[in-house]
Picture 1 (spheres, rainbow, N blue to C red):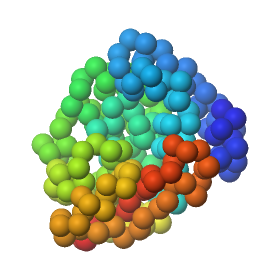
Picture 2: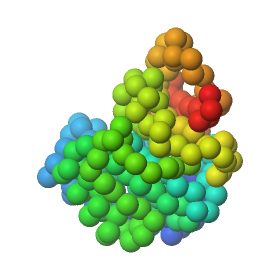
Picture 3: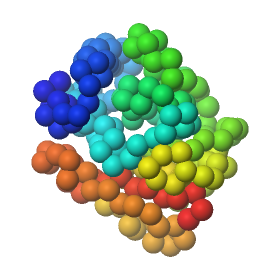
Picture 4: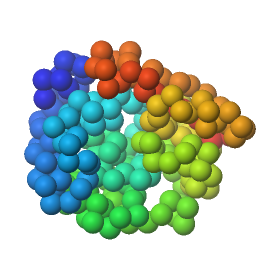
Amino acid sequence: MHAVTETFPELPSSAIARFAQWETLMREWNSRINLISRQDIDHLVDHHLLHALALTRFVTFSAGARVLDVGTGGGLPGIPLAIVFPEVEFTLVDSVGKKIRAVQAMAGELGLSNLTARQVRAETMKGRFDYVLGRAVTALPRFLEWTRHLIRPGQAGSVANGWLYFKGTAWREELASSGHQPDHVYILSEISPNPFFQEKFLLHIRHDS
């Protein structure tokens, strides 16, 4: 966890301990089912955990906020963020049942009472959330269309309710003709000199954009 403590020294030791437990669980589950690519498992911390935690440097959620992680796969970025924000309610969804079962098992082992995982497609979901997260799930215009009905207006954190989407440079081209533009573009390379973070961004798009 040296990379985590070095990059995010503000995180409490209790969170670091849980991240270490999470890493063990992820490696165990990934040996059984493909949560992340087999060749990328050796970069679990620097390519996946640090990437998810980057959000915490730019955005905070109010206690009681409802956050939806769409296309969570093996629980990213939802599980790490649920560890950092224990007073926030996280719902993690994916259409692949075996991945959701792995997420449910890991959340149970980690004692994350603020996390619920469901096998469902976002476009068929009901309910309202303050923020919808995505991590390179699909083209941005499609993601926004799938999830627009799930966001309630207001502000339940440091930014207005809406989408928080991890994306590379393709976001500019994807949004050019969509009628949407980010309210904030956070540059992840500001957090870490790791080459992995070059040309990677966190986009905040307001619900009413």
